[in-house]
Structure formats: structure tokens, C-alpha cells
Length: 126
Image (cartoon, rainbow, N blue to C red; front, side, top):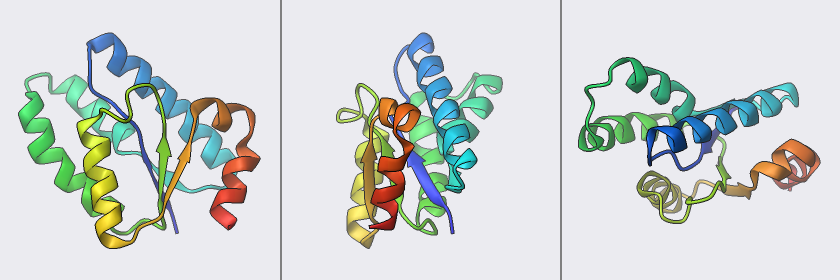
């Protein structure tokens, strides 16, 4: 059993780096609290930073199907509601994917993961 962590990623290089780092911090807290979670942002950011020649269109066309292949096997999607999540193309697509397949979505803020992990634990158990 594992959860899929979704969060916005796009934007400037600086914004993508900030979102990646928050995602890494969130994953570390989740794992320390025995909430097994996979993050495509953690995986994909590293790869696209090394392979800098990927266009936005390639990232969307190639990475979303990969992300969905993980998401379809997850026990649910934890949605990390960083600024911009409501406008994020990827997050919108992940939400549609979940809704179309009856995958539960658990919304949580970054501050809640950092300061109140028990709230998420309660959501996951409920």
C-alpha cells in the first residue's frame, strides 16, 4: 500500500526548485510517519534537470502517462496544496484521473504536513 503525492510543479526555474524542495521535505515527513508515498515530482524533477532539453510539451506528453501508471496503483492521492495548485495543468489532470477512477483525494497544506501530520493520519484512517 502506498499513496501518490501530487503538487504543482511548473513555473520559473526558481519556483520549480522551491516546489521540488517542499515536496522532498513533505515526502521525508510522510515516510518518517510510516505513510508510504511516492512522488513523481521528486523522480521527474531530477531527471528533467539533468536532461535539460525536454520541452514543456514533452514533459506533459511523456510524464503524465507515467505518473498515471503510478497513480492507478495507489491507495489514494495526497494533494499538497502549494500555491498555484488550482491552476496547475498536471494537478488538474491528476484530479480528473482520480475522479474518473474513484481514487480518494486527500488535500493537505504544506504547513499541516510540517506542523500537524496527525491531521493527515486521521484523514487517511477515516
